[in-house]
Image 1 (cartoon, helix red, strand yellow):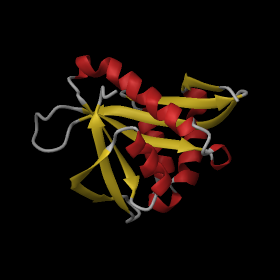
Image 2 (image 1 turned 90 degrees about the vertical axis):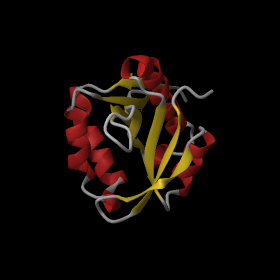
Image 3 (image 1 turned 120 degrees about the vertical axis):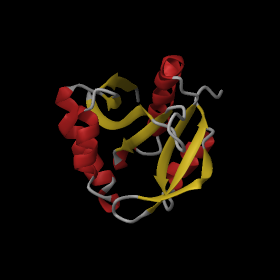
Length: 161
């Protein structure tokens, strides 16, 4: 199985919104939220395709870091979705690594040195993937999704090996 990673284009917006709606339905209205992010010039979206069919995506952006004004920006992986039939085949890992490579290449320009993301506290498979890629919990960041689900905030150095 060859997975192609490619930048998302305008014609991919409906897929991203639909996939987000399905993946994040219990967390809030993410079809609309990700649609807005998709349209934002500062957000990068990369698709995973197998034999021309879209099977997942990752979305990331540099955002203001936590804490006081003036904190360094972080590369925030705002969404990572793999269609259920394609999970556990390395596609999520490939998408995550792609986002981290892209952000790492731009880190000096963005004055960023960290990557962060959020994951539902009961999404054990995703949390295990993120931890295997060097993400660690930020105990100071206990937050909730719009739907009320508790989420964990994880982070790591952006250009970690």
